[in-house]
Length: 349
Image (tube, rainbow, N blue to C red; front, side, top):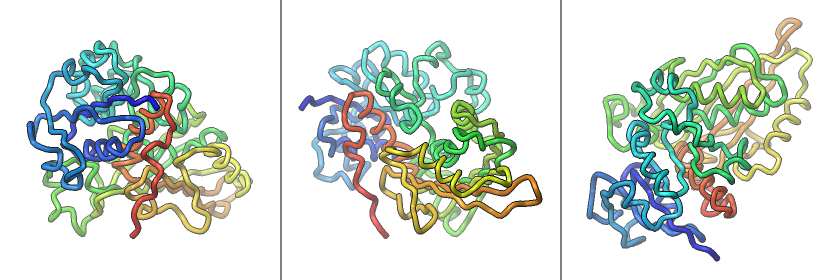
């Protein structure tokens, strides 16, 4: 079997740890280098103790050109502003690229400036990237040279609402609340992510202005929706996981059968989207895995015109919402089995 070579940028972060873990167990892709600006020259286990004795590799601080030498694919777990700047050198190196940051998800550079706080340094490269949600764009991803992997909140919201968008049922205002674990904020603690201030606390932040909002809007419009998503993220005292609850008004004549058929049509054959039969989606069922869960409840008619459909979606922000989805995209781009190194369930409890 053909063996490909991969390089990870941002290898000391939480996303980097998950990328490395998945690559070390991949049957067709070998980890060639782990690049970072800290822990340089030290073994990978210095930043990631779960990797003790798993590899002889050490962290390296290399230029994009030197890091990509001899590689087939580069996986980036860098901050958006850094990823945006190094991308031209990686594209010039001729490797395939999967970027976990938001640097190349949005096609409009004005939106990037609004939501990421600076002008995009290379707006001419935005069209080089395919938005990497495999449940929507697997064919395009498999032909792509460069993929912008979706954000964790965006993936969770989109998977919960895409069936309704495709069925023409996603219209009007859709309030959506996403509760997330602390690992989504990265490895460096801040006043709002430090354990003493996060434990036992729930805190809303960036209401109606989160940076994942524009990619959610774009993806759902592309799927056929015309709703205005009103997204509010909430930080929670857990390490991994996201649970999103979205409220959709549908015509009063909408039936349970119609909704179920929409979800069946959207996810028939989807390797990593599950619909629990006897419960609603929950974080503990997907934590540590690349699986997402989706579900809903259909309320009784309100008056004569609408009833409320409450949609739920859950995933692990570091796996299906992050590094796992990067590996899923990489597999598609390299012509490998989509589920390679991804199909094991998470741990329970």
